[in-house]
Image (cartoon, rainbow over all chains, first blue to last red; front, side, top):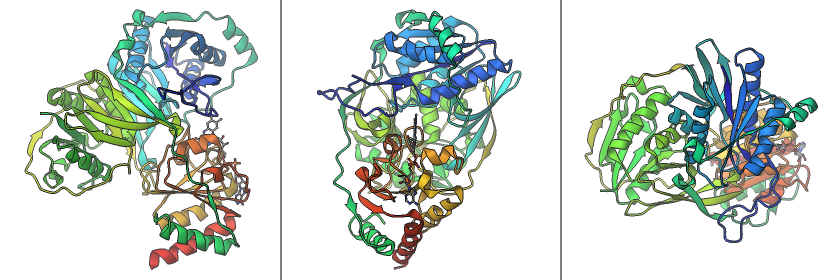
Length: 258
Length: 321
Ligand SMILES: Cc1cc2nc3c(=O)[nH]c(=O)nc-3n(C[C@H](O)[C@H](O)[C@H](O)COP(=O)(O)OP(=O)(O)OC[C@H]3O[C@@H](n4cnc5c(N)ncnc54)[C@H](O)[C@@H]3O)c2cc1C
């Protein structure tokens, strides 16, 4: 059976964030867009499952402005995914509309064994879409997964929680798995892979076609602000002993944090 | 009447600090305060002393280990029946996993990792949260969301003692009869026993300047004196010196402690993204031009191998006096 992967396109981690003059959002002019880093682990895992004979094919889905989002889908194809689906949508949808769109597109695509995602998108940091897809499709979930073993009828997933504690879940039947770093080492796209990906036809859908609507957002963001400017750094002089002594004194008496 | 329902996490018969922060915020709203606790020992928690009006508990071993399906179905059913205006929870691993699913079930909005919170007397919420791993912040606006689910980051709200104790009503909550497809095979406790990076008040972080895995002992010694948690840059994690759970930054943990000490960390944009919300930042680096100094409150140009042991000694003196 197939494995589906949901990916998001996000600004590169190097991006210096600029706000729109009215603070209604981030100014994306000149931003370099990349596949969300955690989604790379999901794509890699799906391709590995197919290579290991545990999946018959890998289909990648993404929601967002079609013109740019297809680039990340092509990256996934170049890595080795078989097919890609874009659901054309405006920029500022919330997790619930995105998850509804993905769940709708997944239902239309047909049977699957697993849905792989990244544990969190590094733009809005919401970490919500994976769980919402699982709810809309009424299947189990495991998020923040750094180890996955796929058996014949069930999967064992290890998820990381606070303090280095690990929860080990057995998931029966189809499930959503949200990948964390450590799950694998994502491969780079090969040159032949890139050439092949260029020629692939990416299936295009609309929000309407998958039963989602931009009017259904539940969370919007407004009043964007840059973090407050910090006062200039205070550099401590003298030898190591003097620096250490002054720092301890400042942290106790001036900053009052110890 | 509008109400605020607090999902109270607890351990060893006590509310976690995050739960006390949320209960304080709930009382401040002046609305009816409801609390929900799941797991053995839930009933014995001091809800009355915390000013809670209505308590919902599943004091039941079935809830001692987190099962996403079981928990989300149980919480969804309760919230759908109670229809609180606001649900507050800590932005913990459990809540971040469960509440998006609950929100989808109810068709309402959820905002994780919030850093500010105001609840108005009519049950509306004003909250802000970091975006782009803390490179900016934004106000959360809930749309058509009769229940607003807010997950708060630790250490952002004050813990205020309740003024008067209450005698809350206590209702038992049962798991809905659903066919579970998830089995919790095991929970392997972390070895550190220290607070998680995301909850820590003080973080001592090391970068590639620490030279090797063994030198992290210098950071652990310092952390022990300060009651701090040790973090790391990605370079150190990629080198295999420490596990990924210790990584701070855009693809690691986003942290906001009161004190962040960065030793041998250059201050790459992806690292800064995860820690620039810290109240006081100390940078120790032998390169005076390292970008970390631009974000630091106090800077020391020097060798970590000389400075760290001396700092540990200085802090020992302070802690003992
Ligand atoms: C997609 C992506 C995501 C990323 N996510 C993260 C992330 O989440 N977190 C993160 O940290 N990085 C992240 N990075 C990596 C980031 O770009 C940097 O490579 C990394 O943070 C550098 O780590 P460092 O500061 O330890 O090492 P370096 O940049 O090598 O810095 C080492 C520092 O130690 C100093 N030093 C050396 N010896 C001594 C000494 N004896 N005493 C004092 N100082 C000394 C040096 O002067 C130098 O400034 C990411 C990168 C990418 C591309």
